[in-house]
Image (cartoon, rainbow, N blue to C red; front, side, top):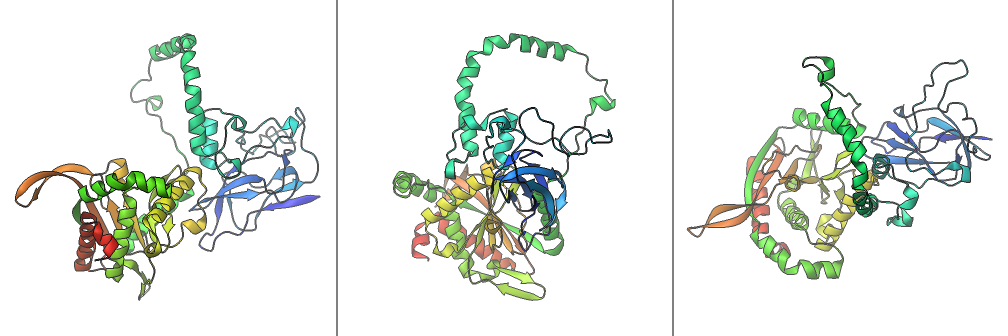
Length: 429
């Protein structure tokens, strides 16, 4: 009996998806709910499970194909899987019946155990699978710390670190490879100006990168975008954090970072300046009576912006815990579409990469975005004296169609004042 493998219902805002990789090949044994294939939307990577126990019959849509909800991409046949050494099923690697070249792309088998024993490959996120393939690792030898024993990226890194001493001990045996490398280095280099001397690599843009590019261009073309700057003395926050960070972590089980201070300060500023928390819909202004702040997070696929919901009701431990979870989920590719949808304001921290000053681009249809930057000690004047303080530049990019310059400047000053006197965050003054 043949059972169709279909693309699941996609989120309302997503029209189609791209097949990233198949975890199985025709003839392989599959189990119900086991991940068969990863598909990428412009926001997240989704896993398509096997509909029933059986054998993967054929692959209708290969990697790189654009698919829509409900589309058939393969079939599962009830029965036993192929045994080691058996001829691949139709559509597997090799030549077709008329002797032509096989059109199916090689499958990613990194981390898949020998099917002869009927073992199943562990469910790996795209980021983990890539890391496993790059280092030619066996996932069965890696201890997973995720939910249900799932292997996370840090598990792979920990496994690699544990292997490092063994590799160092065998370093003297690498002399032949070093000799070969030296011989390669001594070979004549291509003549300047020839195609060989100017190599290029062309790869398709990921859906996430394409969507980010589309939204950035949209923001610049549709919004009257300006940026106002200010600087904040981070010493009060740093002193408070140094005083309480150990007790904070011991009690709440999460580190006390800077982001929770900025989220709380931004939330209070959004209450005072509702235009910054609003958006434009056609010829209407939508004032949001809630505060959903997006936190820009770097991931192996690119920049993603998961949303902290109702930040006015969150405590600082809640915020730090949620941000830590978002960072981990971004790393292992497990962010859901609901995590990335919505948002009334965004905070981007380029300082973690060393940025001293930048002009962040608004995330439509939001009306503003706050940019944090690197903390750097600089001489400043205080009470008529020059002192050295840890300073951070802040940038607020805003849509001038909705937010006037006065409100934008006062919004940023409100954040500055609260960070330079953190007790205001508790008293809301």
